[in-house]
Structures are given as C-alpha cells and as structure tokens.
Length: 516
Image (tube, rainbow, N blue to C red; front, side, top):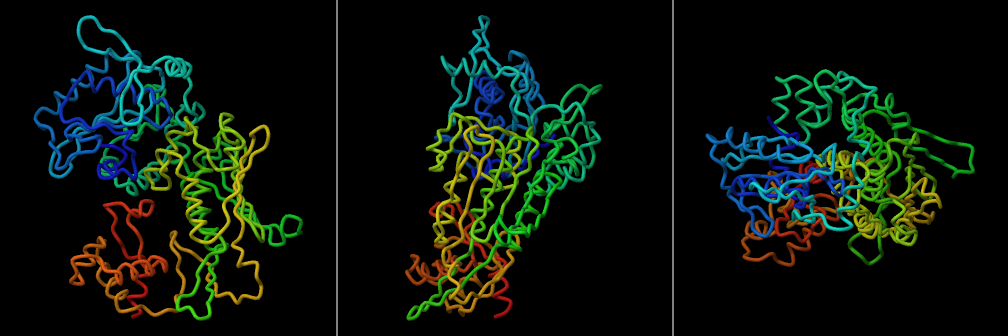
C-alpha cells in the first residue's frame, strides 16, 4: 500500500509543514497512539497528519541518514498499530505504508482527520486506562484543556464539506485517469499500484471514498478533483473571468467560464489571464544602463489571490468565483466572506489568519500540487510581489453580512501614462515571463547560465566554479540581474535567504543560451 504523495515531498517542508509530521525512531505504542488521536481530532482542520517511524528527530527536524526499520518485522509492526488503535474511542484506523527512503525502509502512518471526532486515547496502556483528548499544537501532541476541550467536543459530527460522503454520487463518478494524472504530478508511488488494484481500494487509500463495500460513496473531495463535471453535483462550481474593456459602465462585456476539476479550473483560468491580460513595459531611463521593467499586474499576486479564492470559498454556495477585469483594476470575488471572528479592521489591513480552515482536504491537495502553502502566507506573498513590481498594495473588502469577499489590484501607475512608449509582450506561459530582452548578457552572466544549464547549484558552487573561495560582488550582481530578468530562478522562491537555496535556469534562460 502506498501513499497519495511521494516520500520526498512528504519530507519537504515546503509541501507538508512540520506541525503535520511527527518523526519516531522506533515503535512506541503509547506515544504514537496519542499522536494518532491528535491527528484524527484535526483540531484546526489542517487535514490530519503523518507519523514517520524509522527517522530520528532533533528539535523537531528529521535526522539523516534515516535509521530505518527491520523489514522482517514490518508485518508485526503494522499489526501492533492496528491493535493499539483499537483502544481509541471511537475506534479509528489510520493508513500505514512501508516506503523506501535513502536505501532504508521506513513506516509511514497517514492519519486523515477523522469523520467521527472527537477521539480520545489512553494516557498509558496499563490496566487502569485513563482516557484523554489529544490535539496538536505546533509540532507537539498535548492534552486538550478547558476551552480547547469544549471547542473540540463542539466539533462532534461537524465534518468539513469537502470531506463528507456524497450520497447522490456513485463510485464510478470518480475517474481513474484523473486520479492517475494527479498521482503522477505529485510523484506518488501509488501511481504504479493504481494500475493493479480496484478503484474502491485506490479510493480508500486516498481517503476520497467512504462507507462499507455495500454502500461505498465518493467524498466531495473526490468529486471536486476527480470528476470531469463536478458542477453536476455542485452547481456553479466554476471560475468566471469577466472583462469590461470600457469599464463596468460600458456596453462591451467579454466573458470566459472555466469548469471541470477545480485544479483544472485554476490552471486554465490563470493561463487565460496570463495570455490575455498580463503585460510588461520596458522603460528606458536616460543616463542609466539598466531599463526599468514592470508589469501592469504582477502575475504572482493574481495567482495567489485566485488560489486563495479556490481554497477558502464555500462549495455549498451556488455562486462562482468571479475575476472582474477593468481598464485600471482586477478584482477577484468569492463567497462567503472571512470568518466573523476576523475584524473588519484586520480584513482591511490584510491580517486574515483564521484558526480553522473551511476546506481541509482541498487545502491538502492544493499544497501537494504546489499551488499554496497555507498557514496564512497568501497575503504576505501578494504584498511582496506587488511591492517588487512597484504596484500599490491590494485592497480587501467584504459586506456587512460577510456574504462575499473582494480582493482588488490596481494597475501599475506607469500604465496610465500614455506618453510613455510601451514595449509589451502579452503572454506568460507556465507562470514564467516569456519576453524578449534587449540587453546583451555580460560574460559573467553568460558563464553562470551555461554552468547551471544542467542542474541547480548554490551561489557558493558558482563561486568555486569561477575559482573563488567566496561569492564575489561581481557574481552577486550578475545573479541579481539574471533573477530580475527571469533568466534564472530560486529553487526555494519564498525563502530567498534559505541555507538550502539554489539557482536554476528558467525556460527563458535556456532560450537565451540557444540563441547565443
């Protein structure tokens, strides 16, 4: 049995955050049972978590190379897990999988949020068992106390919409090719197994179906991602891109509607916006060697806002997500508005961090597809992209009843100056600008591009390649210019100062090399 996510991605903190992963060097039934209980309670609706046995931890981080487990005892270990979980109240059974990592066998226990929470577990497995309710706090499993316990108990029978069984659908409404396409994209070893097992077993392993064999039904998450026409089950599950060439008071309205699986909607809507509404301007500055380059709207900010709308909207409300494009602004509207616990002032200032996510499984799948990180990072990413582009900050608003939520981006001010001759390129492919650059490469820039054409490297490796023990100012300046021109990119774009940071060549960089 394999997981619907690759082991490499599971151990990559940019995909799955540390508060959803616990490392254990060995099988410790009492400790692991408490963590299973906490993940199953899914107090924050994060989607549960993973317990990895065979990897030691140091201050919450995995220690490599892994210790591994004895493969000859794997069957006995899994039976021990099953036996330990029988002590949970109500009974809960996670999904266990033996995986190979760095030539070692490790055991991964996947614990999706449970459908019949709250769960409690014995503090010890001795004769006198005292049961406690456990939850996750950051990277620790703790006993729920006082208000936390009241809130946890209040979640009884409250299952997020995307994780509920759909009694109007059949197992056959889950389409195997769409599942396999997803598994291939996230690099799951379950892809190979999916070619040899039944759809029902595959659905159980991915937790996208629920119920007994005599009444097995898809969960809503399965229909949203793995059905060609999810709008048959959830009307108006779509993204509408509406263009008003003469602003909203004009007579012309151009509309494009994007349907299908929600990740497909997202990709095609974003591609449509890139290809038709993202424009770059190059402005020559007298007496300055480098030209100014900026976009009417930074694509990264638009992408983040639309991903957030798909992530946080209610799929029970029969209203589409709407992207409204005027001459001087782009607005993204979704329903409903932010949780009432978030103040109007915080909404205006973009401080919208909710303790509980509306769509825990959708968020999990979007993270695995690398659309989002979660944890309230969307607004800061928007602000950074806008600031780097020289654009104004986004405007957030909602109505008094919190029925809808608006994010508005205003056009870069230079695009309002008609006297500036524009050198534009409309069309961005796969999220990276595909423009024509009029500045020739310096010798250092050309050497760097040729060096990283085959594989990603660190700045230190680039310095060593040029014969230096340190990264010189000349190399730093060349890297900065190549980044600004989108000829190279960070491998960890959201953490530019990460110790693991490397540089990789972009399609535009490869194009420049081919032409040189």
